Image 1 (cartoon, rainbow, N blue to C red):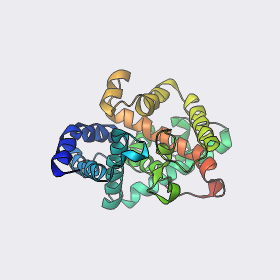
Image 2: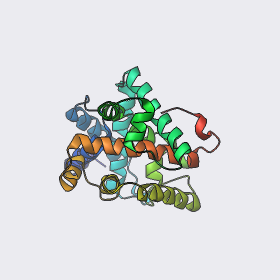
Image 3: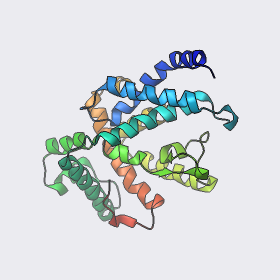
Image 4: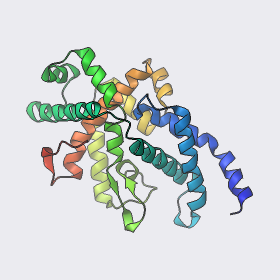
Length: 247
């Protein structure tokens, strides 16, 4: 592929970078600038153009989205934006959700979590805001290297059109676990996750559909992701069990 062809693809798919960034804003801390993420995502698009191999049977747009998202996640990890206090509080949130689920046999309500932590509801929602970009990002960090190739995240492993080290049985089990967890959610929370992960809507679009503020959509997403992590960890890392407190 010569330079003119690469430039043509870059222009043609530039809007794809903005789409991916707008989608990822739901789990990216507000202290990071959108334009900076677009610049990083563009580098991911360039890498996709350079490394795309049509022989592997994956369409270019799917491959490019994967590379753009990967570039942004790598940037988030490298900048080490989260203060130690936010990391510790995010860990505490997951521990509390985990402990209450064991105790109650179900997902704890916001009020139950706040009560267990000894904080007000306002402080609880502030903790969710602080965890934004930490817990969702760590869900992306469940990675595999299928066939010795590049890493594939858990969420990508659920897609039938991307390479995955999971067997068909394991893939079905993961989907069933996620579906069961989502079906147990209150309607508004379930709608946020459905619109984001299955309908492909951006943060702004979800807010319009559900008549919620964008910060509230982010809080709901963060809370559900923490709970999904608690449930999925048992399936993905059974040997670790509930003793690990790593986010």
